[in-house]
Length: 399
Ligand SMILES: Cc1cc2nc3c(=O)[nH]c(=O)nc-3n(C[C@H](O)[C@H](O)[C@H](O)COP(=O)(O)OP(=O)(O)OC[C@H]3O[C@@H](n4cnc5c(N)ncnc54)[C@H](O)[C@@H]3O)c2cc1C
Image (cartoon, rainbow, N blue to C red; front, side, top):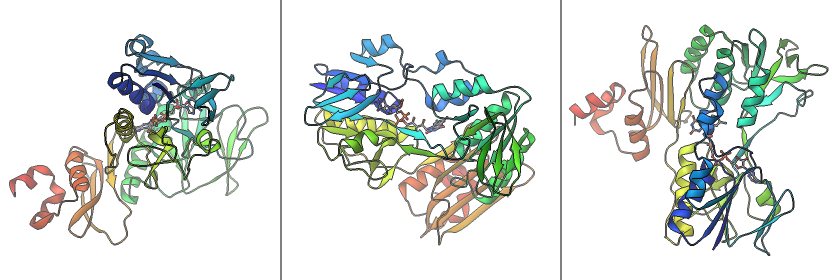
């Protein structure tokens, strides 16, 4: 059996490895658009700050891939899928035949279509090459703007500040990371990042990138100009579905898959951020890897099903622990709030029908696993509700 995996991100690489293990007679090819060996995208912030270099991010050296029986094809973007012929065609026109095809094309960073967005000095924050471009453009003492105050935007801002740049984050909402944090935690984080020299323009929207031959600043909708020689766009991601769409597969926001990660064509599987399962696309690495495992087992003939779990997100780089999980903007939810101003710690727990449905932890995130377990299991709190905010130790004592 010829198996072709398209996309050598975490999902594609994991799936190729599992397939090579479980189907030793199969010919597994892993074709990736990027030139590098498979690397740890989650750790790109360390490359940005200079805590790590490229070699330290590589997760699968060539020898390991070869040793596992995988034919690795870097710098090989797939341009088309010919389903009738059972072949994927590379951008150079080479046809790679497959019996089973796995699409693991991930997401691309959204680039705002603003005047000046194509100027040199305007970059995204998604790939190794993006971070290398940011590092080349980052000048100590110069000014940078990060458009977008979500998880990735803040990570980029902290990284640029660590490189000695004066950073302003332009964010459309009144506090950063509004999808993970409530207003109180957002304010605490804004203050904390302010102490590290990061300024915020919020709520604010960008209308243009100014500059003749390269970016010199960002124009906001109130007419003001934030000067910047480097502009990082971190305004969200979009599943990469063009290939699948052109091949006529069923598409929503992502490539639609069933519980075994099969697309509308039974010979084609989709996993990771490019896939849409029951109306949802994932945006984190843990579920992408789970999907890769499930897909490999399904292709090997097992009856398996992927079931999503509650998402949790943590900001890795603020110098303050920040974590949230579940539904933190639920309507009709009750809140339990515990706040210690001196210790700069805050937690908000959201409850509905005597169950924990969401949690925001700021400052002290040691109990994150406890809350995630309660959210994921959907267990009733019973008589212990009043102990919930104090974490697992009191909870167990009362059991
Ligand atoms: C800076 C940064 C920090 C992050 N931090 C975290 C974190 O702390 N925790 C967390 O859980 N997640 C984090 N994420 C998200 C995480 O990286 C993604 O969820 C994960 O990479 C998704 O894996 P994937 O394999 O589905 O897609 P991707 O990693 O996007 O990989 C897809 C690969 O497919 C390739 N490809 C696309 N189209 C083609 C084609 N036509 N032909 C060949 N190859 C193609 C792409 O070039 C890419 O290499 C972070 C992301 C970034 C950018």
